[in-house]
Length: 242
Image (cartoon, rainbow, N blue to C red; front, side, top):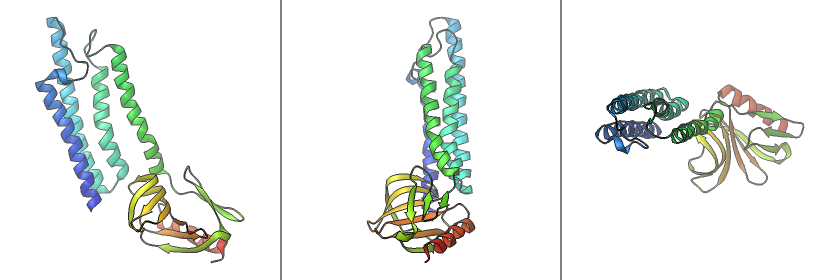
């Protein structure tokens, strides 16, 4: 519940920023990076038309962010939440940039291109988060060990496993030391509130496989589906002879 409230507050803030940008730009167009009024009546008319486009884009993106963001929170979809938080304003900005007034436009061509590239870079930065969110846990069972795939992946020898069991909840987490967290997906190194270091490879919050090895390292594994997580647990128990 607390997480949903925080997400809604973030969405409201992002929408307010977009509405605020539109309002301020309407009062003071010069705050728009690179904007300069033309010197001719024809140019001034083009500038006015472009400013109207800019205002419509920002207001529409703010409305879509607010409505879509709240719906994504109510639906419990973190990937939709990220999409509605980032995409509407980015698309609105790119559309306004590439449709700026002809000839002089809002800035020299190379500056407009830098703006477009910067926005596209932000969108590309979302790709790893989307990838990790949609990807499920991959565990391969070798003759003497299990291998967890991915950039935070690892190998656990069956002979090193001291304890393995199914658990319904994760320990309370303090912070992420070196990993990725997006909604229910948590991968990498985390620190629990009791100060213990744990490695998470979890893709759901309904069922987990807990493993503790001879070094004292604790692991938590889960697939998106509870039944698939239970099958991993049964396989580990069988291989490790627990």
